[in-house]
Length: 314
Image 1: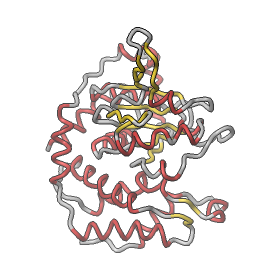
Image 2 (image 1 turned 45 degrees about the vertical axis):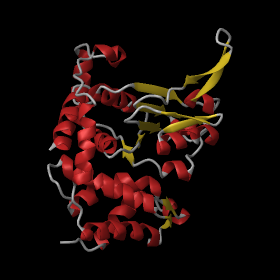
Image 3 (image 1 turned 60 degrees about the vertical axis):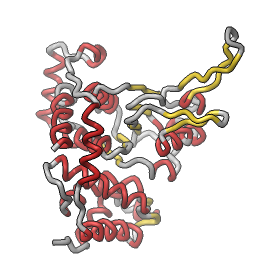
Image 4 (image 1 turned 180 degrees about the vertical axis):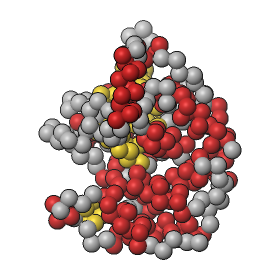
C-alpha cells in the first residue's frame, strides 16, 4: 500500500533527528497525508521547530518559517504589491505562505487580524490581494506551534481558525532513555544549528498524489460513520462541555481514521482507528464549562469518557 510504505519511509528519516516523539511524528505524517494542518503544543525546548523542519526535509518539500509577534501584519504573511520603477507597475511580492510546509511559530503571539490572514490560505489554498487571487503550491500544510504555559501577551486563536486545524498534537517530555539518547547525540557532535548538514534522505513528493488516490479508495462501513457521529454528538451533549465538535470535526475524524487505517496496512477503517484519532482530532474543538476547568478536567478526559460510553460497532 502506497500510504503505509510512504509513511514508514518518512518516519525512518525523521527518526535520525527527532528522538522520543514517535507518536507526534506519526500524527504529523497522518495530518499531512489527510490533507490537513496541525497545531504542535508543548513547552519550549522539546523540538517542535526541529520536528517541523525535519518533516519538510524528509518529504523534500519547500519550507518557510514565520515567527509570530504582536507587530506582525497580514501582508508580512501573504505578501504585498510593490511598485517597480523600471516597469512602472505594481508587482506582487509573495509572502512566506507560498511554500509547501509553513511553520507558524508561536501563532498565539500575534493579533487576531494577522492570525485570520491564514484562514483563506488554509481553507482555500489561495491568497487574495487587492481583488486578485494567487494560488499557493500544493501540497500545503500549516504546522503551528503554541506554548501551553505562557499566556501573557498572547491572543487565543479564533474558533473559526482553530476548527480548521485537523489535529492538535501534544509534544511531551521524552522518556529517560530517549533523553539520554539525545544527550549522547549532542555529546558526539550532533547539532541542530547545522541542520542542512544532517544526512536526511528525502523521500520526495511524487508519491503524495498516489497516496491521495489510495485515500479515496479506502472503505468505511456505515456502522463506522455512525460511530463517528455518536462521538461527535457525545461531545455536544456532555454536561462538562460548553461547545462540542462541529460537523467539520466529525469529517476530520473520518479523514484521519482513514489514513490511520492505511498506515496500519488496511484498506478499511475499524473502530480502533477512530479511537486512536479522536483525542488529537477533537481536543482543540471542545470548549469546557468553567466549573469543569476549575475541577482540572481536560478535553482528552472528556473524549475518552465519551468513547467508553458508546457501544463499539461490530
